[in-house]
Amino acid sequence: MTFRKFAPRKKFCRFCANKDIDLDYKNVDLLRDFITDRGKIIARRITGTCAKHQRQLTGEIKKSRQMALMIYTATHSVSVHKRTA
Ligand SMILES: [Zn+2]
Image 1 (cartoon, protein in one colour):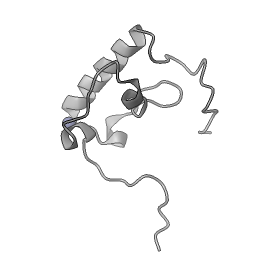
Image 2 (cartoon, helix red, strand yellow):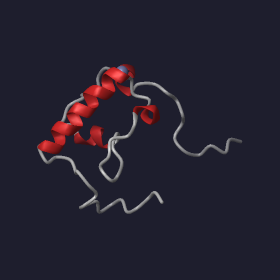
Image 3 (tube, rainbow, N blue to C red):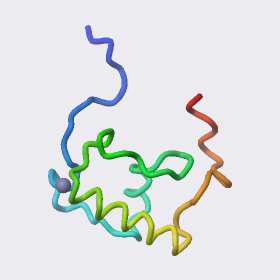
């Protein structure tokens, strides 16, 4: 039995693996996977995203923030409440 219950530690770039993913600032659901609940961009060594796509992703997240689609801070995070300590 495995005791590793949390997300599998496969390191691959999600965007390279799936070309159908629409990396776009309007795709907030996707971008959310790459930021913390406090609105910080998750380092690519954690998500496994390759350098090229991480740069693209960062750009889209920033654009999304400017469009106010995404939170800057945890000001109005309702569902997630201090998961990390
Ligand atoms: Zn990639």
